[in-house]
Length: 460
Image 1 (cartoon, helix red, strand yellow):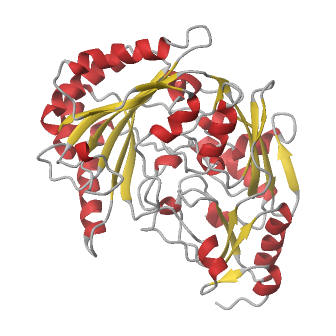
Image 2 (tube, one colour; image 1 turned 120 degrees about the horizontal axis):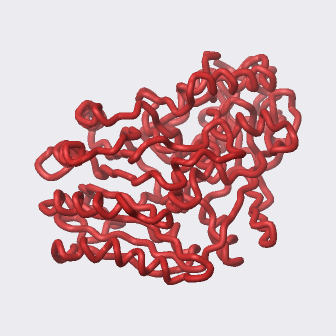
Image 3 (cartoon, one colour; image 1 turned 135 degrees about the vertical axis):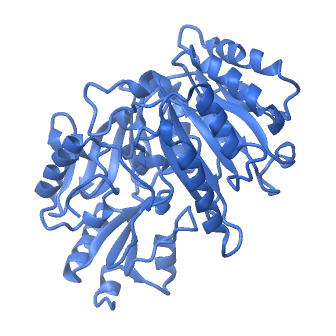
């Protein structure tokens, strides 16, 4: 398709350097190929792009850092708006709030909050965009204490299909505010959000890994500890088969390893509580044997997002995600059978994130998506190698999915989905219908209809 007014509207097409910048994604296995694209630094840039889309009869798609590329539908006949709004993070330490422009990455928020003895509900990567992560749920490293990141959103600024810039909260258009918080998108172009921060001065974070031949012991002791884990502790069990890459510690390059990673909050009255609770987790694990790597440390909240082992550079990724009920002994053994040593798994990471705690509590003033009714979040990730690599990974993902089917809740959380073709469901049917009614009110012509998370709407 040929666009006619792109240059005049600041819109770039394939072959332009600005197009490459605007369509850049984190998951290179899922490139964005819209008809045209623009990087928006102001609200007026957003409005201009939307008007151009309407004049050319194109849909509008939105992203910021491109971390959700694998879960997005093909762009087709669309204008992609990359939101990189100016203004910077503004922290109000008295109200414990931060205003965050779209396109901001968590590292900037974490550093700004830490300067005031505050922390934010970020995930395992400092380079992820705050807006997409938060409005799609957000399984935070502090989640068992503070809940889904979306529950921390206090206001949303967005340009709707009528070109109006709206600031919505519990008092101003509460229906739209409810729907945009986890409803699956398709309401407009979000330009900023306001999030609640929480006090934190000392945190314990890190990971300990053992050789894969200790997998069953590590799994058993981690599960036993999590059965009574305090809400301040959010941990995960990880089976890793990492490549020989410069960013990978040498200790983790010698085949399959299994580890326990996490973050534990202290309190204002007893900041060292985080370290004490970490020792209660690690003491029984350390009797298993000498770990190949141990990185647990007491640190400030500003260091947590930078201390995780998550990828920080774009690359090709293929994976799968499920929310699981309590596995019990049989489910735990099944998980290791299909991901652990001897399984032939191509996954570089197979992870069980411990949920419960505040994750399971619906926020009183929360949005369309406000809690997780599951015991674990499973996330498997691999890097395709060669032309047939993706197919082999997808085949093994299907094996894992089939093996874990007895414990599958049938639900997912959008921030962990890596593949648009996988089953996705995070909202109840009545919630989907209510969210759709809001979409029809603010976007009656369906300008943003293709930007909706699969499984979140009946409108397409």
